[in-house]
Image (cartoon, rainbow, N blue to C red):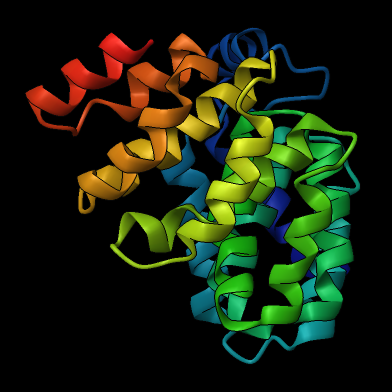
Length: 238
């Protein structure tokens, strides 16, 4: 199916699920400057899943064209659908798509889009492609805090599962530890917290000598899965 036609079908499905009251509430909550239809995340995901089921043969170029068609109209749920579709078809993406993903991240301007794009879409790509992973080194020192946040969160899922590249995350986080931006502080704490669920000693040993440089937001998140003794030692070192 032509990407423009499919995008129109997706838009119609999203509009049909919209609730005007929810749209206004979410727009205020996210401090959003774009239009909202008022569709819940599960319903957006259901629309995307239906596309994946009905169009299993969508190829790379068709996926990118569809993503562009949906994204270029500034509606929050259309952009949410792009995140879900890129996740569902993530196997089609490669190193050359990191530029596209960076553009989408820069244009997102909200955690509600950035977090899924970085953790699920970029994260899946960098796990299987070392060249793509190296792009994160540039992102980690980028001018846009959403891009720096994305570099951190792109490493989240495998670390949460007990694997992943903690050395890379540690380098990024160490360089960002004293940043004032809330969304950076929160992201560092989030990744440390989820890593600590399976490897508390690793997080404890990394954080202890750095805790005097870390924000309260970071520390509060990071210590949640640690033992009482580890938490006490961390808090005493602050």
